[in-house]
Length: 423
Ligand SMILES: *[C@@H]1O[C@H](CO)[C@@H](O)[C@H](O)[C@H]1NC(C)=O
Ligand SMILES: *[C@@H]1O[C@H](CO)[C@@H](O)[C@H](O)[C@H]1NC(C)=O
Ligand SMILES: *[C@@H]1O[C@H](CO)[C@@H](O)[C@H](O)[C@H]1NC(C)=O
Ligand SMILES: *[C@@H]1O[C@H](CO)[C@@H](O)[C@H](O)[C@H]1NC(C)=O
Ligand SMILES: *[C@@H]1O[C@H](CO)[C@@H](O)[C@H](O)[C@H]1NC(C)=O
Ligand SMILES: *[C@@H]1O[C@H](CO)[C@@H](O)[C@H](O)[C@H]1NC(C)=O
Ligand SMILES: *[C@@H]1O[C@H](CO)[C@@H](O)[C@H](O)[C@H]1NC(C)=O
Ligand SMILES: *[C@@H]1O[C@H](CO)[C@@H](O)[C@H](O)[C@H]1NC(C)=O
Ligand SMILES: *[C@@H]1O[C@H](CO)[C@@H](O)[C@H](O)[C@H]1NC(C)=O
Image 1 (cartoon, protein in one colour):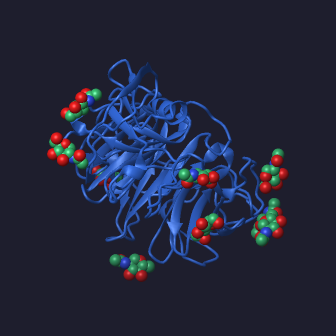
Image 2 (cartoon, rainbow, N blue to C red):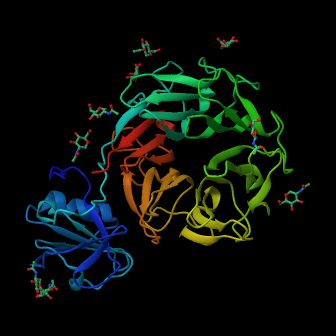
């Protein structure tokens, strides 16, 4: 790993204190060999951890470590030396940014993402359209084989397949001229798509209230759940289905049925579903969901992690349980833009270490939560600031990661998909 990461965000050590020589970076332990030569430069009161880090990176050439504690004032402390865990009275909200990466031992996993995105699909200037090089309100994404990205091109009523680095996409489901319809060839606002290992697609077709199976290379699809064009709240109907997840070991599908405030499970080839979460009306109670948009199936805990859009939180619903437990955000449905709150979360994904990535749509940012933590860090976008520069987002709706932890963000209101490289 080279040391050229000046523009990349710092890596972060979430200080779950273990002992003096071990600290946690994400879920990875690494030996902190450098003892502190701490000399404090200054203490500042700043609102956001990103600002704290930026002060160190940009204002003080001799600054090597920034410690941000959101519980204190919140306080930002800048050091010329390095901090070891022994030096810190850590709270769960203390975040240490260490800039002196070139002096680190050879093995750390640096959790950093370039804050400058690269447009990989759609127009970088945010223009919408139905030409092959454009998108209109891209929603769910999925990575396929051969460096392909599948994009639910929502307002264009089609699914586009985009090869990374190509300037144009190809329509793989729906009509390429973006015409809406309700048939085996036409779609009406597809939201999200999952793929099996052969790139066969399963996707939600929102305004048609159904789930479609469309084989790789086929010219038409089949309705496999819901009734085409009919909304309802029975076990075989949906009202605006949104997110979809597939358990690849069994073929079971999970679908968020947004306007019924529930998540349905469909066993392989079943014509009717089973309510596995919510279904108790809209609300913030622990047996209820409140417009569940995106969610992810966590096979390690046999649970669903749900972006509970209108309750502004992320909840975990163990399959078979009758209520959720809070993972991120407010228990009572409070929205906000601090590191512990969300505002209309839409998409959510998990990495193999259990870290959570949330498309925090109305805050125009992607939040990263180390496994087990409810205090996040902004890894893409600028909190509260909608825009179409390469470091900004406007209503990001979906986040997907590849095996290198690079982020693909559907920048819904900017009509583009942005890639933020892990570094
Ligand atoms: C971050 O991305 C920008 C734009 O692609 C690039 O110019 C810059 O070198 C990258 N920085 C790092 C540290 O990789
Ligand atoms: C760090 O400090 C400990 C205790 O004083 C000492 O044993 C160790 O050798 C020091 N490590 C380095 C890399 O200086
Ligand atoms: C950090 O810890 C070292 C070793 O225990 C100590 O000498 C130093 O004074 C501490 N620095 C601060 C800022 O507390
Ligand atoms: C934005 O980019 C697209 C695609 O490159 C281009 O066709 C369009 O003219 C651009 N619009 C503006 C306002 O620059
Ligand atoms: C990409 O799509 C645009 C707009 O439809 C078209 O003008 C251009 O020829 C296409 N480029 C390639 C390489 O297919
Ligand atoms: C895309 O382009 C970048 C920069 O030219 C290159 O580093 C990368 O390997 C390419 N990726 C693919 C999948 O071709
Ligand atoms: C879009 O394509 C379909 C299928 O080729 C065609 O039936 C329809 O008339 C087209 N719509 C427009 C507006 O061109
Ligand atoms: C599911 O349906 C497909 C297509 O009709 C069929 O090939 C497959 O055998 C079915 N699987 C089960 C377990 O019923
Ligand atoms: C619908 O599913 C629920 C939960 O699985 C079940 O309790 C209920 O009996 C089903 N309703 C019908 C009409 O099958």
